[in-house]
Length: 252
Image (cartoon, rainbow, N blue to C red; front, side, top):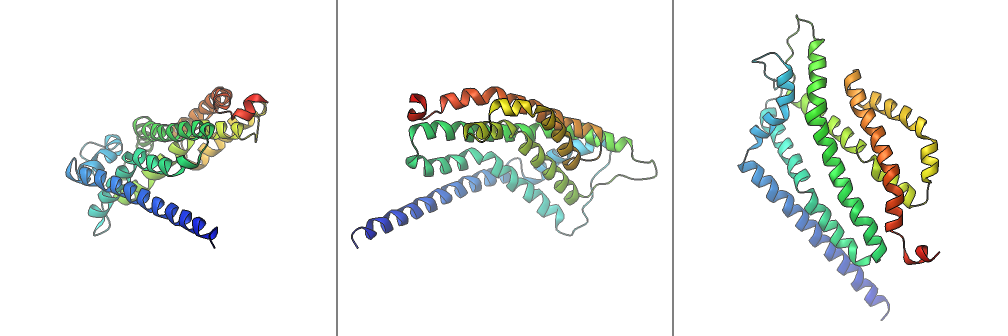
């Protein structure tokens, strides 16, 4: 009974710690969301998100809302999503603070760079999609639209398209992290990854053809960065493996 009691107390203390970290992470997201509600406001945030599409449409064009409460719900969804992205460093810090006490020194050297780099790469992928890809894709689509059709996108459909594209590019920019993790865990070697490079390039174009609209601009905009990021992962992986070696691995 004396041995079981400390185990139960430790488990309960971990649950309490997890609850506290989740509450702190949620409070951080709520604070950022409240700040965005006050300034610049959900309506202005959606206007910024819709600007690449409006720039590709004829002057004076606007989007439409087919749902009764869509003009309210859609900007709110965008605001909540952006609040979570902005608060992501705080959320990841809470996750890190929860698991850090149970990690060895070399494991801390492994996790912290991966968490930071994956967050930065995801944000870079979303920014690349918004500032570089959207304008070219929407202009390409608008150029092919017949003169007899009035292009007036629905705000909900536009939000779904934008979110899926941003998610695809954000996930694609995680390729270096995937390469580093595979090499660090010993699943595959850098030499083997270099050997399969031609298949990776073909796979990048196949994935781009699946997750992007059926136009050459968006497909190349996704496939080429995916390939370049794969090459970056091959360069970084050996350095990362050396830095995060455990003491017994270094002695071996």
